[in-house]
Image (cartoon, rainbow, N blue to C red; front, side):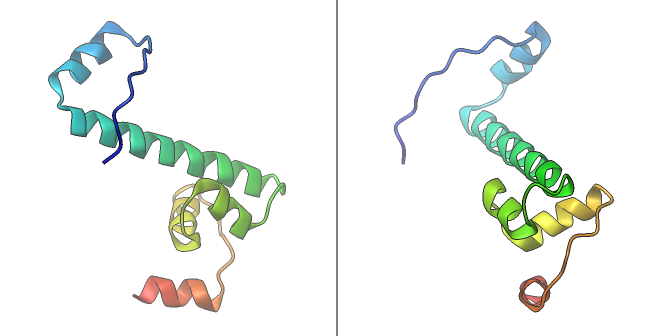
Length: 91
């Protein structure tokens, strides 16, 4: 397990109260999920602007192409599908 590191951030008092009531594992999970979602959103923005390929967007976001494709569909985008992605979805 990684050694914990302390970071000081300023957040609204109401959010601080909610986080104070949560355990460490929950807060760490929230941060991981939030950062992953943010990375996906940024990668899809780059992809939709034509800046990078779909495969490069998945790599930039740190997720599989099939997971990125699902996130793209949620945003109303139609990502390209190839046989490998279809096979991955079938598993």
